Structure formats: structure tokens, C-alpha cells
Amino acid sequence: MQYFDVAVVGLGAMGSAALAFLAQRGVKVIGIEAAYPAHALSSSHGDSRLIRLGYFEDPSYVPLLLRAYENWHLLEAQLRTEILTISGVLQIGAPTSAIVTGSRASCQMHGLAYEELDSRMLARRYPQFSVDAEDVAIFDPEGGFLRPELAIMGYLKLAAQHGAIMHFGEKVTAIAADDAGVSLAFGENRCRARNVIVATGPWIGELVPELAAHANPIRQVVAWYRPGAAIKAGPQDMPAFLYDQEDGSYFGFPAFVKDGIKLGRHAHFYEPLDPNAANPPVNRRDTDLLDDFISRHIPSAAGQRVNAITCRYTMLPDENFLLDHLPSEKRIIVASPCSGHGFKFASVIGEILADLAVKGETSLPIDAFSFDALQKRVQGAENLV
Ligand SMILES: Cc1cc2nc3c(=O)[nH]c(=O)nc-3n(C[C@H](O)[C@H](O)[C@H](O)COP(=O)(O)OP(=O)(O)OC[C@H]3O[C@@H](n4cnc5c(N)ncnc54)[C@H](O)[C@@H]3O)c2cc1C
Image (tube, rainbow, N blue to C red; front, side, top):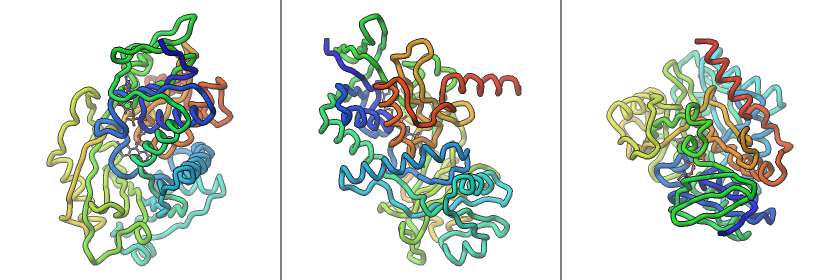
């Protein structure tokens, strides 16, 4: 039996970052991954993830985002690789929409730079977009996108350089705590650790029964479109974007890979999926939804869809996060998969998980992501029914 200070279960976005932070602090750490980095059934593949600072969802995320930006820049410096591209992010919607009012409020509360553009200003500056006449945009100049596969491989490389042990292709099937520590079973192997971090994304309910009823994996579809020659669609010319429509919130990226502009609708059709089954294939309803948005709002790419894939979100009540010790067992720390908007935070969540595992606490603001807070949200939702 091998003994470790910390074991990290699941080496996706959150687990790979936690492993790197721990190894760099000189902690004796093991990471165990059921498959391989950023695989197609995880939540962390597909070229790009949005990052933005003026968070419309809630201004209380901003301090974490500031630290996430610092940590992404640190990772880039350590790897000498570009992982974060600042293209700006347009947050577009009706003047009274949550995306517009929330982004403005977040920027004002935290003194962040932003610009407001009406539809005519937007058309002049960014002719790639065709937006409804009454809609407006909050432009976040610090926004942009991350490359998830490079980030995860980068964190795993740093972890390896600092002595982390890693196992791939082995699923942890049991975690049990006793007086001597926490034991883990994976494949033919067993090990023991003082503390364990569980960061298993869509599978979180399997090892954390407390979350089985609350963490719901759903299907997400994204598609890529080759822009016509008439527009400049690279990150120097076209910002990433979120566009709130009556039927949901669409997100997209400039063309920085050969397949072009990427587009999705947040949570797609909210269709539940079984994390252990293959992803249901992309179907006509999926592509009709995205093709229609492109025709209306990025017309030069209409009819130019070249690829579409399925990915997985895992939703918690209120689309929030959970980062906490298990209430029944403080040596087990849980990192939720973050309701479809967590990747941008992975660089700070890695630091937080390392703090919780080593010091039992963190100075970063995570009270809103505790089991207690989750319980209150669940009760609040039940009381509303
Ligand atoms: C299409 C799409 C677009 C998104 N867009 C954005 C965006 O623009 N901005 C943003 O911030 N976020 C975005 N997100 C959300 C973000 O990508 C996720 O919140 C994040 O990637 C989740 O990371 P994770 O580490 O929790 O899960 P994962 O990356 O899925 O990692 C979990 C890992 O655990 C492993 N595992 C599972 N069970 C076990 C076990 N028992 N033993 C060992 N290993 C196990 C799995 O194999 C997997 O590799 C998007 C998500 C999707 C799907």
C-alpha cells in the first residue's frame, strides 16, 4: 500500500489544477484519472472556454476571477505557452436583460473597465454581428477565451515536474475513511492518503452520494462555422460573445482554429444524460437551433457549418458551484463541476482545493459554495414549489 498526503480523483479541469498546485507546494500527491486528459466524455474538451471579468451572474464572483486571471498568466509564464487569448467579450441583450444589467452592475461595483454599445455602434465596430435594433452590448475588454486541452496538459506537466504520481485509465471505485486515513481502490490498486479531493465532473454523484440528487449531468452541443471571406473573424478583429435571446443564452468564439467560429446555447435543451453511456449523437434539432442563430446574427457564416459535437454540463441548483469538505468527513474535499461556467475558474479552484487539502481552509472567498449554502438553495427552491 502506498501512502500520500493528498490523493486527487479525476484529472479534468479542476483536478489537474489542484494536482499542480499541490505538487508545486512539495506535497506528496497522487492523481487518479479514469480515462485520459480532456477526453471526449469529460466536460473539458472542444478548443475553447470563455473567460470574462464583469460577471453578470453575480458580482461576488469577481474577486475569484481576478485571482483566476493571475493564475492563468502564471501558468502561461511557467509553460511559455499562450493559454488565454484576450479578444474582448461582447455581452449582448435587451437593455433590461440580466446579461446587460448584471454585467454593468458587476463592472461598476468592482471598478472594472467596460463600454456600452448600442446596436448601431456595434454594427459599425463589429460588422461580423447582426443584432436586433433595440439590443445593446456591454463590452468587457479583459474578456477572451482559454484553451482547455492546453491548460489541462499544462497543469499535468507541471504536476509531473514537481513529483506528482499519476495513474490514467483507472477509475476509483471506493473511497473509505478510517482512523489511519482515507483509502482508495482503483483497478487492481489501493492507496491511502491523509486527504482526498474528488473532482470527477459529471460522475461526481457516484463517489459523493450527498450530491447524487443535486448534480445533474446534461447534454450540451456546440458547432463550428467557417466564416465567409467578407468578414475578419480572428480574435484580433472579432470578440467572443454571449447573446441573450428569448429562448436562451448563446455563446460563441472568434475563428482561431481551422473549423472557424464556435457556437453553443447555454445548457442547450437541458436534456439529462447518463455519464456512463456514450454521448447521444448530434441530431437535426440540435443543428437547426444553432444554424438558425448563425443565419440571424452572424450571416456571413450561414450555411457554413463544418463540425458539431456533444459535451456535458453538470448542473447544481441555481447553476452555482460547490467547493467544500464533506460535512460528514472533513478529510474528503469535493469540487463540483460548476454548472457549465466553471472552466475559467479552474486556475483559482485548483489553488482553493490545494488550500483546503493542506491547511483545512482558504483565504479566497468561497462561503457561497459550501454544503450549507447548497442546502439552503435546495430548501429555498422546494419552498417555492
Ligand atoms: C460545451 C461546453 C462549453 C462550456 N463553456 C464554458 C465556458 O465558455 N466558460 C467556462 O468557464 N466554462 C465552460 N464550460 C464549463 C466547464 O468546461 C466545466 O465547468 C469544467 O470543464 C468542468 O471541469 P471538471 O474538472 O469538473 O470536470 P471534467 O473536466 O469532466 O473532469 C472530470 C474527470 O474526472 C474523471 N473521473 C470521473 N470519475 C472518476 C473516477 N471514479 N475515478 C477517476 N477519475 C474519474 C473523468 O474521466 C474526467 O476526466 C463549458 C462546458 C461545456 C461542456
